[in-house]
Length: 122
Image (cartoon, rainbow, N blue to C red; front, top):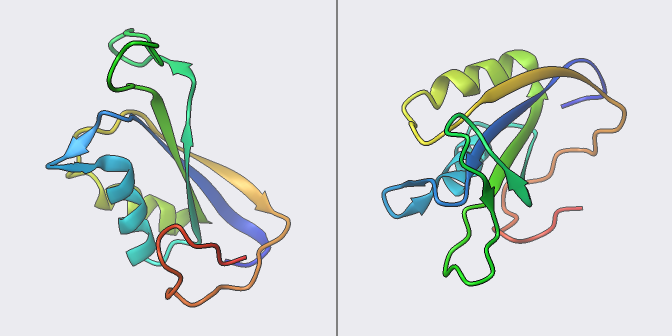
């Protein structure tokens, strides 16, 4: 990904209790994005939110598990993001997906994919 025009920001809305099998969907999405070579992915944890069901998702002090909203942000070229969105149509635990144009002001050089999960490459 280079600085300049044509970049996009894809946002995928879901929650912490969304799983595919025994795996959190946010982990699966980030892994798929990395395997497809997308420029970057970040998972943001919300404090409060609701979606189509109008059920408020929040932290409850005495609950064993939270059901907080999550937003997965992916950045790359718009076409690449559209292709990625189409490739995840098999996942049904996803809420709204949005795409917007962004202007990339700084894009560090790509690093090798050998950085382990949880590591920092910057």
